[in-house]
Image 1 (spheres, rainbow, N blue to C red):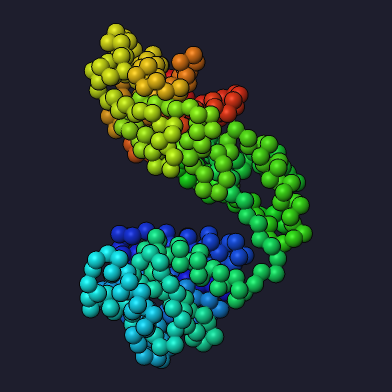
Image 2 (cartoon, one colour):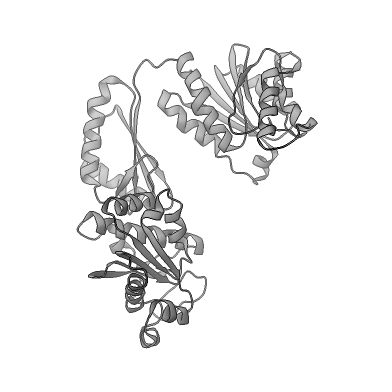
Length: 425
């Protein structure tokens, strides 16, 4: 089955909006063993949209058109599809009822601009949108099923999951089972992971697909099989990967470092307190994004200035003078102060040089000290992230969370990044 994508919108062409929708569509299609053949992004030009829909319809069994279903004059998908199919735009009673209900829930009057969204090509099949005002629709042209979807990702995803994917699964049933497992990893780079797998599993089976998706801070490793005969091989590969990558696997699917740590602490009935300098509260923000964080997150201290480190956490003035804010001694005292002031069982503390200035002899931009542990065992290590300021903060926050994760799980030995991220001397 040939499926292609047509993404529309001037904002895509100007770079104001990054096209994440095509990635979402492609990723969700994997479970149906369907892949995107091609994708094209164009602006809000009626003639161009018509021309590309006509062309792609001749090349596709399914064409997904994304964007252009809103209430404004530059939303042109319905008009373009009606022109291409040679039908009239008509007011769809079901779409109008949806708009009236949507406005009613918000205490809004249904105006002429919104009412435009009820105009659909005659004969099209409505696709419900439980989030936004714009319904989707599909119609056939030249033997191609054309599916029109809204642009906002928060509307597109539920429409895909609840309506479009089930319809595709029924329309194009799988002949073979598709199983995709996603491992979320931290602390190992893409090339290092590839080499580790190549050397540790040189007999990787041809009918099990391996995929990598690098990101900051996590790396996703995807293991896929697309036939019943490959199932045993896939399960064997997964078991060997789990054993080989035990210390680096954060979890599966959409697991994150914060959600992993919240889960671990909640299972133990314990809490964490944070003492942040160079990350400016980022670690606290990441933890509190996780539902249920209130059970484990006790307090966060953002102590940027030295006098605040002294006043809020009891860091010694003498320690700061002798060793500087970015030092093992200071982060240890920050962690101890966070434990003492909050009463939490665990603490994380970070102090570093995010740049672009602030370097001192022996402490280049990118230097950070991280302390973690409980009152009986606070540990501290120095790392080096010579990257842009925002990425520095992201990686420091992630590393701090990971060090405490490893501690709670009792994972022995240093992770690779403690060896690889040493400050040059």
